[in-house]
Amino acid sequence: MTLAQEAAEVRAALAAAWERVPAPFRGPTQFMGRQYAGCGATIGAMPKCDFHCTGCYLNTDANKTQPAPVSEIKRQLRQLRAWLGPCGNVQLTDGEVSLRRESELIEIIAYARRIGLVPMLMSHGETFRRCPGLLERLMEKGGLTELCIHIDTTQRGRRDAYRAAQTEADLDGLRTEFAQLIRRARTRTGRKLEVASTVTVTQHNLNGVPGIIRWFLANADAFKMVSFQPLAEVGRTNPSLKGVTPDELWQRIAEGAGDPAIRRGEGWVGHPGCSRFVQGLAVRRSNAVAFVPLYRRDDEGEMRLLNELLDRLGGASFRLDERARAWRRAARIMIHHGGFIIGRLLPAFVRLLRRTRSFRANYFCIVSHHFMSAAEMKTARGEERLAACAFRVPINGRLEPMCAVNALGLRESYYRQISPAA
Image (tube, helix red, strand yellow):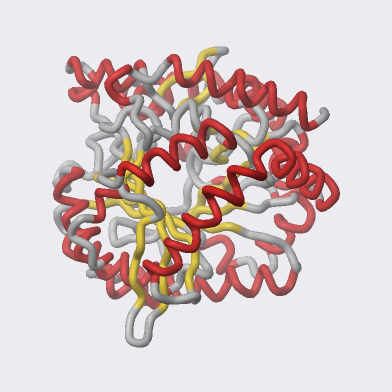
């Protein structure tokens, strides 16, 4: 596919996504239909998990279900590719996918990339601790470039001192171990690996969120994103656990970031009730690490610049490019948008550097993703969120919202199809 053909396909996918965004949410910080067409996820890749977390969205029969064949996962990936367009984001998830046979996992990762998707492997990370070298092999043989590791006190299944962690601070040593594993894998392979982390948030660990933020900002060279997920009443989640509201969560995030007004940098992908994110820089200063948002919603000039940036370059991505193709893409961008980049974007970058007061900075993104319970989906707002859902799963030819998969029995029904004896 030529770069021109790819650009046309990206524009078509973004236009279709923009049509699904409700009119009230089509502001300058709406990235659905401007930068992303959405995000997809597999189902059945490995329903089983060797953890038994207190906040788990799988059903009680998950560990009795056999994984779907590789051919079925490839079919799902093709459907997601048709929806998301080139360089679409797809999560390899559903249970603990790292437990799948290594050769099959490599085949799935490589296939996703070959057809034009960017796969992120979702994991509790423990398999990489127990199997040294596995992460490097997935990078070298499968082309894995994105990984997400879930770490929090709702997890049950680690076999060392971390199994008894009572506070999120008790897990900082584990986070440090994973950061070292990530840096080591990059060094040994000479390859790129972008890593995120997910955190389930309950009333029990809410007060630990500021410390989590501070840890990740200090280690933003290893992790590029942390995604907090307020507990939803679905799956086999312990009913005694209590969730938190997004506003409660973001109060703690602001505390950890040292910025009471952090939400001035808020962006959305789809319905704002589904997720929030703030992109910024983790900036090392003499005695601390600060978080500086890339833009502010209350600054009209920055909003005009962001709007023009997404109009001109929205959907552009180098993530699947080999070196020669990346140079051709960069040259094409400069030919078409060089004046904007030099005259508008570069001066804005200089202003951002002045605001950081430091050249020691790493990109970092703070996200919250809000899954719904079955009861929430029955409300008018819940139905509106489902219609605008940016995070979907291919089941029987349909792209189903992840919340519906979690809470309306779609996962259980699919498991019965792929493993009738379960």
